Length: 259
Image (cartoon, rainbow, N blue to C red; front, side, top):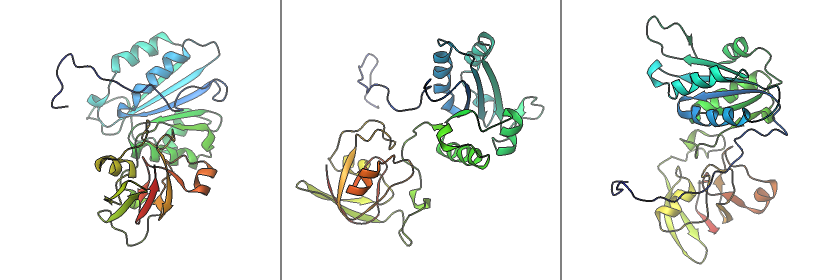
């Protein structure tokens, strides 16, 4: 980016993934839990729903740390005034003295008081990884089925050494040897996604979402093992035959792969 000049042209992949309103499965009672910049896709979904026919209810719950962290504030106000189906609740976790709006965190008690009956709605969650995890846990504690929760992809998990299944005694800074059959080998840190390590050493495979969902970056593990976090939406046959999504896979021992 240091070399980018005004007028330079960039190329990009097209939008992909499953984080959007699906009229066949999502119903009409919708809740969007947004944290920080996670508000951006909420605006797109709201504008999409506005073009559809149906008796929709869409409750946007927008959480920010401070009042001046709120982005798209004016756009949100315009949408809230324009659409009867829309309810907006802005929540500040670290309010300044005298702030009169909603404050606190989106815990189970807060969400129940704000939203009422929880189990029949469709939920969308977008924000930092910790926000995702917290909101998902709170909804689960309220008996919301996982099929009613959609979470936006947000890259590989941070601090994989804290994930369930991380080998005891393995330190995040440890290195292993990754061998690519017929091509070469290199050293990789165990806390770096396999795809990142490959690219760092001059190898690559087709990829897009880099969040474990699209499966374009699949590689086959011939020897050794990797840690597949929950973000890796692996099919049963993938796991059975040794395929992994390299963008979110962490090599926890020496491995040999095919790309």
